[in-house]
Length: 242
Image (cartoon, rainbow, N blue to C red; front, side):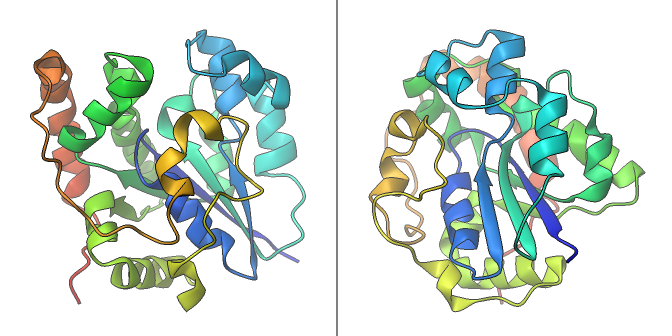
């Protein structure tokens, strides 16, 4: 059986876990949560919550993860892997010629305040925007046209956006993708207690609500750095309009 291997390359504090849960409701799909996270922590020394626990729970050698997990055995027709774009540090991305790749973005005016609550003032690398833009260029150079999802569009019209995404992937849309059980998924990484509070309370895609709190002054600089990348990526994002 030939497995379709889908990599979702997201930025942090996005709705990537909810999207992973959506694919996890499909009977034909196995899901994997951030297989390169321990590698990223190992090579960068990033001080993320639960760092040692994460590194003890997973393979820290990125090349081994690619060989044994990303391109490794799978018993189902589809393997959906939630990935973070900023985890691609010291990684040979030639494996992406064997994967179907998707980019997931979120307006930095909404993402940055959420990220700051977990890791403090982020750098541009922490946000993933520059990495996603570079990845898009590299994927296009090898003949791929990866679908781009914007979190706001997905939350405004989940059925429409997921239907269009499935069509781009050559899959049938399944209504089961719109809901899941409260409390998490068995595939969650050990970092879930630090990052997944909101999605664990959900039973589906939560309707979009704009942020009401004032944007933190301390984040104005990094916002200015992120916006050109976000605007460029957003221009090609799947729209929820019918």
